[in-house]
Length: 396
Image 1 (cartoon, rainbow, N blue to C red):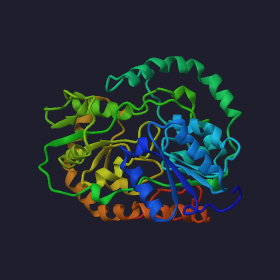
Image 2: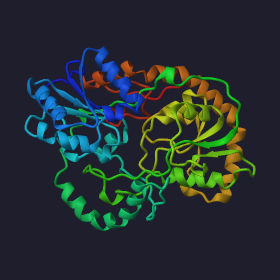
Image 3: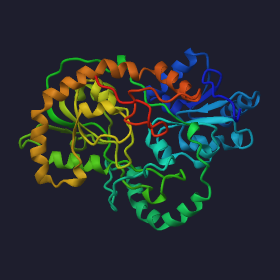
Image 4: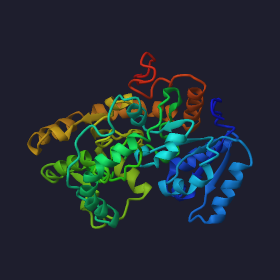
């Protein structure tokens, strides 16, 4: 396979049932590649040795290229004995900074759902572009978030030594083998309905993003730092004015903050809100919620992204709370509400185009086109860093 053209339909796709049961995007992708004739292997959960042995036999019985997608880091680690000698695989990366680096380094093609992964590898940005706090405030209070907050200080001390070692393990980056595959948008899961507007500002997303940094391009000093601090701080500022004068929905202040809202609650809350808090975190990571909020007709307030989603500028009221104190925030919230009708109309104008651009088969066609040497199609990026002269933004 090395040196050959990647063919999505002729590859074996391997993904995890443990992610598919709770992630609509995983199921949509799996169904789409099956429809295109590709073979799919779902790692059953909880998996046993027999399950891994079945994968090993399937992988080794031919020289078919393997595409690893939607897998937990611990699942990838269990694959190491299978792929150590064979290799001949590519990997689709979501939160790429948490992926065991061997799999990224040895992958023939690296396919990023978040364009910051390509930008970092091309040396155009750092993973984290704003300084996270030294002390992480866990939200909600669960074992993982508490443990992560406690471990952040020790990893700060280890960071320089780990990074020095990882520098030696970095792969030689081949830009022509870095591809982009954004998250799909599923029209039937995002019905546009009229709802009574109950909230001026709403938070449905996480405000505590803490990860173990495993990739060689992810500085270890950011392990267990809260990379969603901008989201946390913005919602803290908005909540100061809850009831004075704004109507605010903040899941952190509910009686059941540990219980995630259902999908039905999520889309209903979104439609019931004038603005919804949205940022990509201190690492500027594209999240599927941006497009979902837009397709539900709800404008956003927060920080846009430097590389992806050129349409977002029409649908997001920009607030960089890291540069603000609570005093100047209140006038901005009033300004956002005054401009709500325009942002709402922009969301409605963009909706049909977003559903078209991010349909799963169209995204797979774009991925195959990249494998065939073509640039990323217009509409997805503000600028394609691999092809700066290629047209990308478009207007509704």
